[in-house]
Image 1 (tube, rainbow, N blue to C red):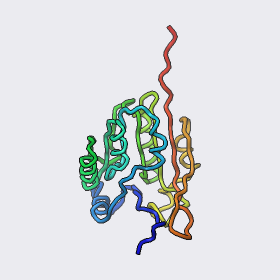
Image 2: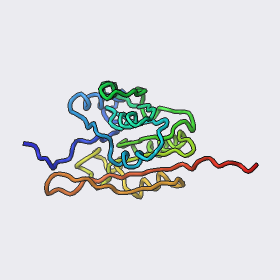
Image 3: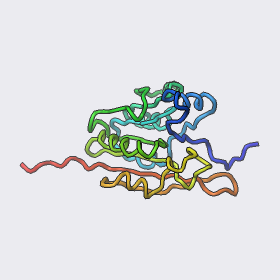
Image 4: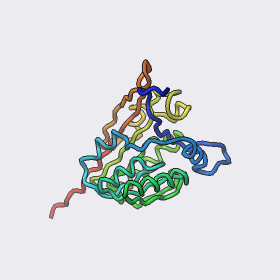
Length: 219
């Protein structure tokens, strides 16, 4: 019997696997072996619901739960992932939902978009090595158009051993994410989710970055 209060599986993205594994190989296996959540991240829904739809990039989209929700709400979405299995699941789910996604198979650490080309970028549960994440976020922020937004979330170090990668240095704290986003207009918060009965809550770090709209120059 399953515990109805137990948390649903959540993506805990990181480039994992052996040294000889091509990008996405580990996630191909994980997506093929187990069901994956279909509901969009509640924190993304809360923040993006009031936005006018535009162009969105879901970096590390996996089976597409966030990308599909955005497309259902009028966004033109590019989903990027290294896993062919994840992208195939996203394609099937999008077809069932009656929406279109542009799906790109690529290593998220190498993918590039034109500057100022996206109104929203989603980076959900990408747990990169410390020497990779700052460079990735710097690139991502450069993709945002004036008035655009970045939604970022990842598992907190307080969830070490229960959710996310087993290495503490790949997990996040509010202070770490604030440092990574220093100089930007960013709201960084701690988000707790219920775990199984009698267990401490699972914890995520959530950040919402707003890029100022372009200012008109004086005539």
